[in-house]
Amino acid sequence: MSVKSLVAAYNELTKLDLRILRVIEVAHRKYEWVPIEVIVKWSNRSWELVSKSLKKLNALGMVIRWKGNYTGYRLTYTGYDALALHTLAKRGVIERLSPTPLGVGKESDVYVAEDPAGNKLVVKFHRLGRTSFRQTRRFRIWVGDRRHITWLYESRLSAHMEYKALVMTYNAEVHVPRPVSVNRHAVVTYYIESLRLIEVKRGLSNPDDVLGTILDDVATTYREVGIVHGDLSEYNVLISLEDETPYIIDWPQWVPRTYRNAIDLLRRDLENILKFFEKEYDIHVDLDIALKCITEGIEAGELELEEAFEKMLGTKELREYVLGEESEESIEKALDNIEKEFSETGKEEQEKVKMKVLEKEKQETEKSSDSSDDNPAP
Ligand SMILES: Nc1ncnc2c1ncn2[C@@H]1O[C@H](COP(=O)(O)OP(=O)(O)OP(=O)(O)O)[C@@H](O)[C@H]1O
Ligand SMILES: [Mg+2]
Image (cartoon, rainbow, N blue to C red; front, side, top):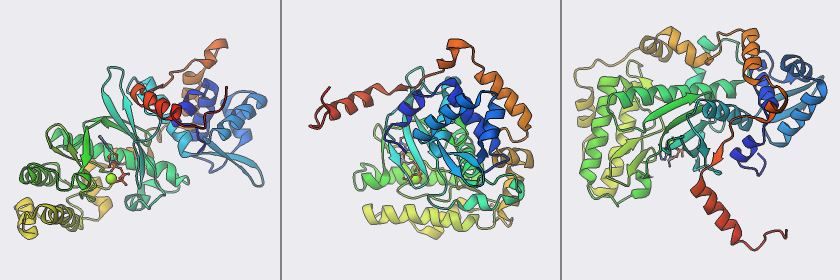
């Protein structure tokens, strides 16, 4: 991506630029590289305007141009980020975004954000392809050949899967970040002032309580919610700075407990946590006993993954995750909606919901750039 921050790049977009990004997104259902003729036709704007916008989007790193036997464009993650931001801002979910990500994880970029009321939030943009996403491959049955742009639907599926798990566990009073919203590949939750368990290391004042809460939460997740996290470790537990409550994060790879390998995943989750507490605090909890307590009275699952999900979520809901929110909508209808959303008259073209920069972060960024010696002369 260019050196511009996501929020700066996003703020440069006009309604027309967003409209063109949206057209490309819809056209990806048919084309891997969307022909420029199609973009011109579907965006209902002149060749000149569209070309100018594509050039700008390309410079901002939001689309990539391809020249083969025709000229085509595809969205990049940054372009997809911009579309998600636009929707989240328009819905009033977020108003400000940090200029730089809080963290760049294996499979995500995580930003701090704020809603209009000033609540501190986290926006996690899912990125697939950095490492492989085990789960999606199994969903081919629902995906069929509709999706050749795998990163696009896989990142969206990953986000929707994570959101679903957060809602289910949060409602069961498991300690997880409170889910706020999901759009495309972006999950929004409340921010937790915290350190990861791996960073806290031996700094817990009540390690027994912390381990107890984690084990209770794993049990509730298995017994009441009926799922297994599948990637639990000291890296995916946040310890609240306020009161040491442990919050379990990072849920996209969860599986229903009816899945035939669920118990192995549960065992591994528990093993990671118990090993950590054994090593850092010399607290010994027997893995087999813990596993037995959690699974007691519940029959082990025997279903294949797809079947297990189908049973848990129902085919309709599952299809919604896998195929995305507008999959059942025809391309014509989607284009119609774009027309409604991005119709421009005169000055209005410049108007859209702008994203503000999180002030505190901005001041810090300014401070650090003030103190650097290589400020260009005015
Ligand atoms: N709700 C939250 N509040 C505060 N910080 C958060 C929150 N959610 C995520 N983070 C921070 O973002 C990091 C990455 O989040 P997460 O583990 O969900 O993504 P990931 O793609 O798996 O990243 P990683 O590869 O680092 O595990 C976390 O380790 C944590 O530092
Ligand atoms: Mg993680």
